[in-house]
Image (cartoon, rainbow, N blue to C red; front, side, top):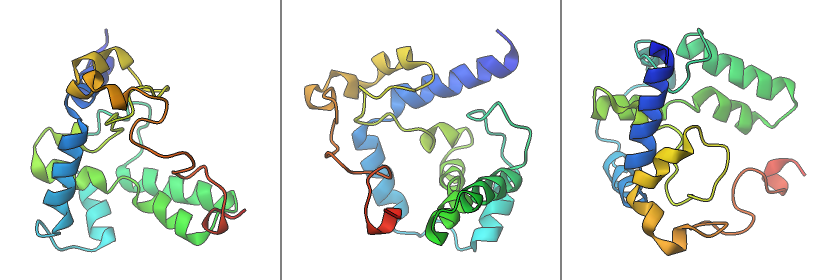
Length: 160
């Protein structure tokens, strides 16, 4: 296994094993108070350039370039302005995670929390180490979510 793939596998092992629903709720309380830092979006995006993101091994772009590229792709696809903004700021959770822990990116990326039947995760075999994998109500098709929630629903905000 190459060092890059080993780092990516370890990232996913930590992420899948440790992100529980209770963990996510505690982080929401911790960061919901907004008492850790005071900076603008551009300052936070600039800070992201100092991070090494093992969750995204397939790009050599800086974090700012990646976020601008994402926002531009969304804009070119004709999505609403709020979605373009979402594309620009989609990685700011990494900032919170890295201020919490030096190796904290696994805290903020691709949470499997309470969605153990979800497909498309890298290294799904690591989910067996997550305590939520033994909670029966999380193992249903929707887990804790309701039908129609998320960004794939159609409606006034989604540009139907």
